[in-house]
Length: 316
Image 1 (cartoon, rainbow, N blue to C red):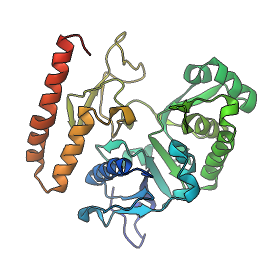
Image 2 (cartoon, helix red, strand yellow):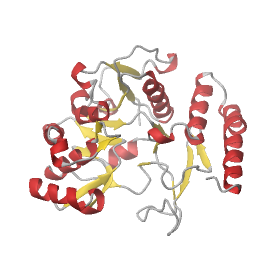
Image 3 (cartoon, helix red, strand yellow):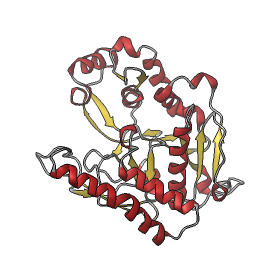
């Protein structure tokens, strides 16, 4: 994508990325890694919504900015994503979770979402296949829906429009009675925005883009990818064949996502640690080849030996 101009005259100045990093500096670390990876591969503006004070790397200051969150949103945890529409800075926005790393051009995602006001990487499925029969009955009784969009909430496309505000407004309305409807909370604490936004998108005729692993995925199918280098943009993940654990029938045997969502349980895994090291070495102005060698020797090799030994001892 072409770099947005400061005077907003460029067509690409209409595009930006937003991520959240509130209350804990751990989230800031993830958000800065996410932003740096995006800016390695895209000329676009990135906004971090945060109530914390932290320095922006010098080389990113012209494209990375901080937005102050609304005080009433700070206690919402993950549920803060129900308010993405209140933080839009440009006509077209990708919300990307801070625990994601970008490996390529986001322009493909913007293009795929064209014509929608709110979209995700997902697929429309029978409600019971995603949320189970009890919740499917609740969805049918209250909103008349037999189908929902199954997706991972690490990525949202949002166009600044009245329709987008209606979608998020409806999701917030549903979330007000979240427990009454019987939706599960994350860690028995946080509202999960995915089911409420799925319902709201369906009610407003918003469609997902293909969930085939090319836009965003997690490490479910491949916990330890063999090829992963954020500086080079290389990433190859494998989908194990049936009936092996981790198989996703809707994914190809091999795929290369633009965004890799590590999720909270994968942030101490060597795939994330290796990418974090690569980004840190890049900030230290180390050549890509040298950074890649160091990451392979200091991170990949010892972690792979560790997992090989565990496998041999049947400890995995």
